[in-house]
Length: 288
Image (cartoon, rainbow, N blue to C red; front, side, top):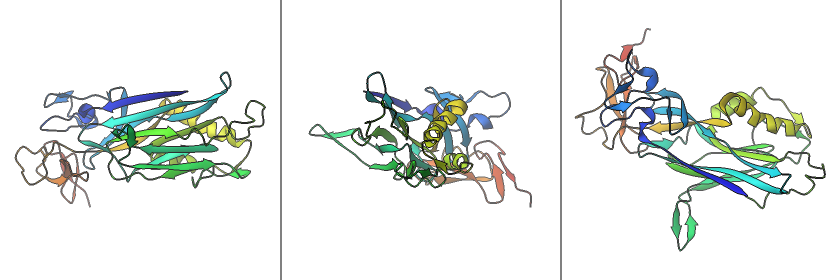
């Protein structure tokens, strides 16, 4: 059985209007909107953790996909997620990694929107395998034993996570012979966030490892509601920096920089200055 979720993050994520971006944490005192764009802490139910105006990045929380054994039906139950971004957003290929946790897990991430002759085609497709053949497992390396990670291609606007139903052997689970857990988890997430948690973990011997796999999800459940942080790259409009008319760079000590995705631009403070380039006098000199 599979539950599939689909969601779209719209352009209001960081208070984006035709002329200006002012992220919520950087609004002037008393402001709740600017340029006709209402500024919110969430968008479509997606919580915004942080926004970096100068880096053109936003960190949001997205749900973790799971693949778990259900004792009542004696079947595997998948809870999988699809995400689609607005035109000026991309999932960061440098800050995020596709992460899979489990002992019998093969999961994929890709773009399956295109179809030809009723056969799904992928603009990109990648995945990784996580197994637990050894009695001693370490999450510190995330190299395929209990955990695996892989990079994604540059700037995808959409992704779909799914599990390989034929990979997990469920024999022995109901008989109590299963040592490695009944669930696998997969998520595109900020790799630094995962590293900061696993750095405090130590080698754990099976069957205790099942508790460690569960504790990973419990960690997210307790602190972030079963979700993981993911980094988005964002930009303004469709024009590049060749036509300065109407630019959103308000600080006199700022400049326009073409977005890495190739669509739109972001504003940055001049060298020697720091702050918010989207606000008047937002870029201030850095003390030596």
